[in-house]
Amino acid sequence: MATLSSYITEVQRLLHDANAVFWSTSELTDYINDARERVARDTGCLRTLQITATPISNTGVPATVWTAGETVTAGDFVFSNIFIYEVITGGVLGTDAPPYPSANYTFPPSTPFTDGTATLQYSGPAEIIPFATLTNGNTLDILNVNIYWGNSRIPLRYLPWSNFNAQLRYWQNYVGRPVCFSVYGQQQIYIGPVPDQAYVVEIDSTILPTPLTQSAPNAVDPIQDPYTTPVAFYAAYKAKYKEQSYGEAEIYKQEYLKHVQAVLNSVYTRRIPDPYTTF
Image (cartoon, rainbow, N blue to C red; front, side, top):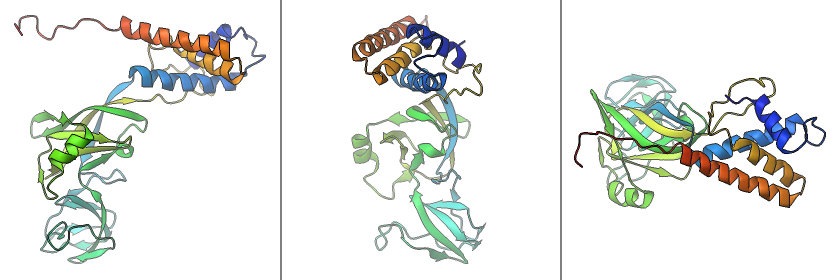
């Protein structure tokens, strides 16, 4: 199991600088953390299931279905049709849902409006799950999305954004149980149709590692063998590149790439889903 201390020792040996004459341990720590992030990006070795909810506000607070006559307090979030609203002033919701979108109100309001005795403010679309609301703040990519529906766990189909936008966002008021997801940019998950009720969501994701610190040099790296083997070579590459020894830096870079490929080859093993099937 790798630690910051073991990484530093390995990098110092590669650089022939065991006594930290040319590179301080704090500098090597920065390069090692850069290398760990690079390994996680190149291999997807850190993978986790994250639980969240939808619809969810951009602050991470789940929204509840707008219900006529319900008592709400300031700071709550409710959703109606395709939009989420924040409760600005608490009170009792009215008898009619917010009229957005409709023939006369296509776009969400830009200013607070009265609903019964409460005051609501448009917060965002109900079809988005921001990366920032996920339980792990270092989310890199989304691989799969499941929604919990009764006793079922429903895997959502993935579509590239252009197809998702054309097929599932054509009608503004198209709501129902989500069947598909797409990733827009690096910070947002879109699901479609727009949820018709609150759902618990399970997200299969790859994440970036948290930095190792000198205050805990023997803390075990969550990146495990064999994915730890390329780290020292990339850290040495960064050290040599900073030194402007570009020829030596390129050697370490090539060694890093070879070790990453070797790791990916070594963990690729056969898995038989069912030895008794004929297809």
